[in-house]
Length: 176
Image (cartoon, rainbow, N blue to C red; front, top):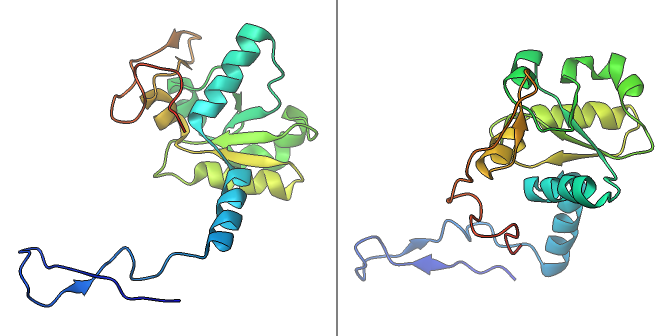
């Protein structure tokens, strides 16, 4: 069932209403939405979930269960990367992936951030080689914005305070 929603104009007057831009295209059925979002979770990992897995691995010896791949250039990697990530620039995946990564362990890729599709391109290249793969949403940008530690080319590890507009500052759990 498709319905057209309207809302008052900006002045709030009784002048003709306009079509609600959010509902211009109606929402999917609940079944279609469930299928889409389930599929999305099969393709994406959250920065906080990746960090929690690394923390449990480090502190409790829990199985990490995946390989994290930074697909950026060498100068970008040197600037800052996630400690424990494997450096494998997208262009080198065809010639180096099978030597650096275990095909029996899922791979999670990342690049710069939401405005960059390098993580997506590297995930595609790895999938085409037969790897199970997910992309880390937000890339290194949101890793840093959420206050997780990074490593530089010098091996030093740095951490900045979480951006209170993008991550919880009073808990390790965002509640989602």
